[in-house]
Length: 136
Image (tube, rainbow, N blue to C red; front, side, top):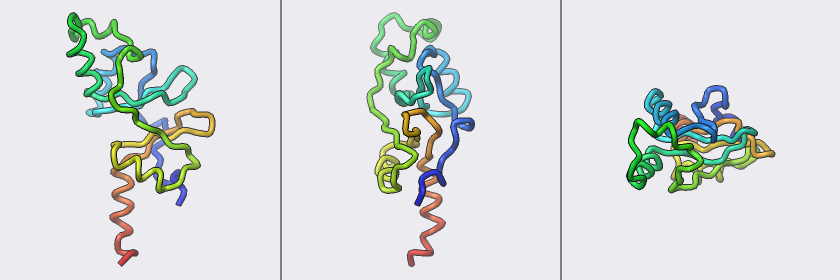
């Protein structure tokens, strides 16, 4: 099966640019109710996923950092504790499922590493659930 069937295109995904600040990410995540968002660079390439935990650890480990001055912290300066892997649009369904086990979403890139969207774990589970009758 083609993984493109599951993709939520970039135009419908909440993501952030690598040049953004910690405050911008915090506000975007709060507004949309997300616990993690993909980060892309100025060329549109996927560079990683930033999580609430990453933001909290940065806050905890930076003594003078308060919410008021998070606008002075670039997200490139926030260590990411977990490396969320992406898949190529040409990847097989097995590699997608193995990543979705440990990630809420799997970023999808084209052959040049350009971010083109995500595949949500919930979409994969829903698809499998709907097709369980075919297996019986």
